Image (cartoon, rainbow, N blue to C red; front, side, top):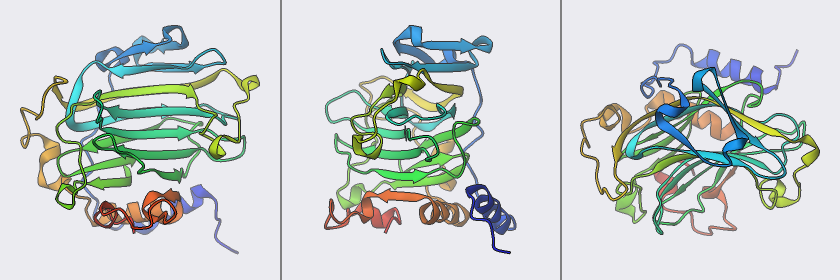
Length: 296
């Protein structure tokens, strides 16, 4: 009998194969707090609902408007985490975003973007990193679970040495500080956290060929956790006052260890559907940071 090729079976085999390995040190455990502790609504307040004393939030998208929220503070480095359950069903054209962004012209940005799809087709997770106003560093993966069935945890670890994207504590992408190679790295522009649910059917699904089916509205994205553990700074700040003294600055968080690199390699080999580092049409010469990030 052949081995099942379902995503869940593949994941089980992977976890069994790695169960005897030395475990990596993940970021510190996120602490769940109510929405109002760290965040405020920013637009279309009537398209947001809070439950259980603010411990759970729903964003609602209909044909009239999307909606969103942002952090109260701005941060230079830290660990930021959210439990998210994506809209279910036919979600072509719908984007759920969770990201960090500065507010000036040459802005920095660290993105999770969940791109909806037709019923029966997997949602796509796109990540991107903007530095000094320059982006075009898209990577896209399928997830090894249905992100609309239950909450899953999406986290960003950001320090002076690297940015790491995690899904349920599995690293799915790293972006190293390659300033010595001439690549800008976000280190001196505080960023706020944002999340939004919106219609992007001009580009989100098959390059805009698949349009949002409003008969399936409202689309609902659900949130819990609202964890922020960062160095809070004013928008004008250029450095973190506690730089070098926080847990995320310590040696064990300056790189992935061997176990984490193996997990990242698994994501890249099994689930990646697009990586700017290997796109020779857009980039005839591989961007210099890709080798350091082990993306090629």
